[in-house]
Structure formats: structure tokens, C-alpha cells
Length: 237
Image (tube, rainbow, N blue to C red; front, top):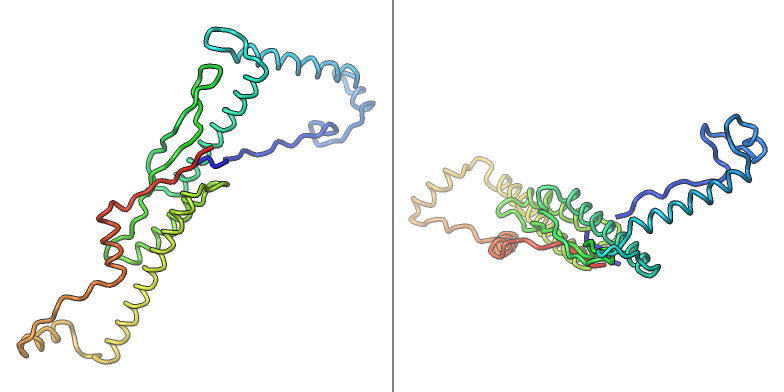
């Protein structure tokens, strides 16, 4: 099951564990003041469990007031579980994505009790490179990847967004490396020549410096920016 947008802690249970951290047998527990003996405790537990089931059955009813059948109760519990996992999934995207994610939207299914439960969801995310700033793109893509893979069960669309963000991340890293190499090369060949000096030399020679060619990074960043650079992190139960 892919719920696009999580799983709560598993409660610790043990029949031999008593408050205070002591392990007590049935005889010792019965001698404690105010505590029932083992047979009495078992009867009380069974009675409380039965009362809980009755209360649950009374609370879960059809819109017309009729009691839900066993099959309908199972369906209702399944819908509640899916709803919880879907919402936790989307929340994980939003927490990890921060400023790059938007408001979650959901698809609902009506349960036998007349209530609507989320069965799928999606969160919009801005995954486009930052034009002209590969360093900023590197930080952004790292967060986008974390957001896409934040849930315990990322959907195929989540993996797709993460893969695209990795491509942009690698492109930005390559651009940063090329810029560093160019700076080092310029410093070695023209240590005492400033940008202004080079411009005057070009003007005196009757030539004008042509505008710098677009790098692969700039081409990709502009192309993505023209399409909006947004997608959704989504899944379905």
C-alpha cells in the first residue's frame, strides 16, 4: 500500500509487568492491598473487554442509526487505518520538505458509518534548480530528496521526484567544479589582470567580448523554470 502521504509506536504489553517495574506472580499480586485475585482480575478484564466492544458497536452506526454488521465494522477499521497512514505519509513529506512543499490534498472514500476517510493524498513540491546559483540548488535538491523519501513507504511518484532532484544535484555540483577550475585557471594565467583591464584591452583592440555561453546547468535551470519546476509527491492506498 502506498499512502502518499505513517506508523505509530507499538505499545509494550506484558501480563507479568506491574506498575513500579516489579514482576509479580498471581499469588503475590493478590496479597497486595486493594488488588483483586487472579481469577477475579481475569473476570474483570473479560467484562471490560466485552463492554468496550459493546461501546464500540454502539458508537459505530450507519447514518440511519442502524448498527453496523461485522463485515462493515471490519471495513470501517480498515478505512480508519488507511486514513491514518495516508495523513502521516503526507505529513512526513511536508515536515522534511519545509518551504518547498505546499498544502496536502486528499481523495476520500465514504465509510459505512457515513464519514469520509482519506484513501490517497498528495503534496506539491518545488523541485526546480535555482537559476544562476548552483550552490543554492545543491542545498535545495538535498532537501527535496529528503522530502520525497521521508515516508516509510515512498510511492513510485515519490521515487521519481527524488531521482529527478538527484540529476539536478549532480548537474549543480558539476557546475560548481567547473567554475572553480575556471577561477584557478584565470588566476594562474593572468594573476595581475583585472576584469576592467581585460575589458579595456578588448575595447582598444576593436573587439567586444561576447556574452558568456550558457552552461549545461543554466540551460537545464532555465528549461525547468519555464515549466514551473513543480511536481507532486503522491501515493494511493
